[in-house]
Image 1 (cartoon, rainbow, N blue to C red):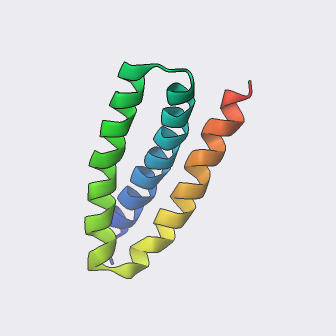
Image 2 (cartoon, rainbow, N blue to C red):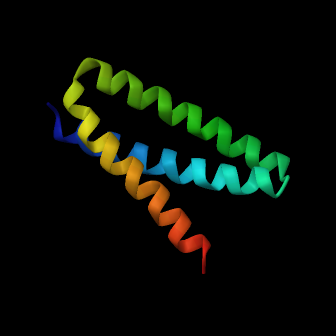
Length: 80
Protein backbone atom coordinates (compact mmCIF):
# COMPACT_ATOMS: atom_id res chain seq x y z
CA UNK A 1 0.00 0.00 0.00
CA UNK A 2 1.39 3.36 -1.06
CA UNK A 3 1.28 6.21 1.49
CA UNK A 4 1.00 8.68 -1.39
CA UNK A 5 -2.12 6.98 -2.77
CA UNK A 6 -3.52 6.63 0.76
CA UNK A 7 -3.20 10.39 1.32
CA UNK A 8 -4.45 11.14 -2.21
CA UNK A 9 -7.59 9.06 -1.67
CA UNK A 10 -8.20 10.82 1.65
CA UNK A 11 -7.83 14.28 0.11
CA UNK A 12 -9.88 13.39 -2.97
CA UNK A 13 -12.70 11.98 -0.86
CA UNK A 14 -12.60 14.93 1.50
CA UNK A 15 -13.02 17.16 -1.56
CA UNK A 16 -15.73 14.96 -3.09
CA UNK A 17 -17.95 15.10 -0.03
CA UNK A 18 -17.28 18.79 0.45
CA UNK A 19 -18.26 19.32 -3.18
CA UNK A 20 -21.40 17.20 -2.72
CA UNK A 21 -22.44 19.43 0.17
CA UNK A 22 -21.76 22.56 -1.90
CA UNK A 23 -23.51 20.99 -4.88
CA UNK A 24 -26.62 20.36 -2.82
CA UNK A 25 -26.58 23.89 -1.42
CA UNK A 26 -26.23 25.40 -4.92
CA UNK A 27 -28.98 23.19 -6.38
CA UNK A 28 -31.39 24.32 -3.67
CA UNK A 29 -30.43 27.92 -4.51
CA UNK A 30 -31.10 27.13 -8.22
CA UNK A 31 -27.61 28.19 -9.32
CA UNK A 32 -27.19 26.14 -12.48
CA UNK A 33 -23.60 26.92 -13.48
CA UNK A 34 -22.15 26.40 -9.99
CA UNK A 35 -24.18 23.20 -9.53
CA UNK A 36 -23.00 21.82 -12.87
CA UNK A 37 -19.37 22.72 -12.14
CA UNK A 38 -19.45 21.01 -8.74
CA UNK A 39 -21.12 17.97 -10.32
CA UNK A 40 -18.39 17.64 -12.95
CA UNK A 41 -15.62 17.96 -10.36
CA UNK A 42 -17.30 15.31 -8.21
CA UNK A 43 -17.25 12.80 -11.07
CA UNK A 44 -13.61 13.43 -11.95
CA UNK A 45 -12.47 12.90 -8.36
CA UNK A 46 -14.79 9.92 -7.89
CA UNK A 47 -13.23 8.15 -10.88
CA UNK A 48 -9.77 8.48 -9.29
CA UNK A 49 -10.91 7.09 -5.94
CA UNK A 50 -12.82 4.16 -7.45
CA UNK A 51 -9.78 3.14 -9.48
CA UNK A 52 -7.63 3.36 -6.33
CA UNK A 53 -9.77 1.31 -3.97
CA UNK A 54 -10.65 -1.39 -6.48
CA UNK A 55 -6.92 -2.15 -6.67
CA UNK A 56 -6.54 -2.25 -2.88
CA UNK A 57 -9.46 -2.36 -0.48
CA UNK A 58 -7.39 -0.83 2.32
CA UNK A 59 -7.88 2.51 0.54
CA UNK A 60 -11.46 2.39 1.81
CA UNK A 61 -10.09 3.58 5.17
CA UNK A 62 -9.05 7.05 3.95
CA UNK A 63 -12.16 7.10 1.78
CA UNK A 64 -14.48 6.79 4.79
CA UNK A 65 -12.53 9.27 6.92
CA UNK A 66 -12.30 11.80 4.09
CA UNK A 67 -15.98 11.38 3.31
CA UNK A 68 -17.02 12.14 6.87
CA UNK A 69 -14.72 15.13 7.27
CA UNK A 70 -15.54 16.65 3.87
CA UNK A 71 -19.24 16.91 4.60
CA UNK A 72 -18.72 17.87 8.24
CA UNK A 73 -16.37 20.76 7.42
CA UNK A 74 -18.54 22.28 4.67
CA UNK A 75 -21.75 22.09 6.70
CA UNK A 76 -19.98 23.43 9.81
CA UNK A 77 -18.65 26.47 7.92
CA UNK A 78 -21.84 27.05 5.91
CA UNK A 79 -23.66 27.80 9.16
CA UNK A 80 -21.40 30.81 9.79
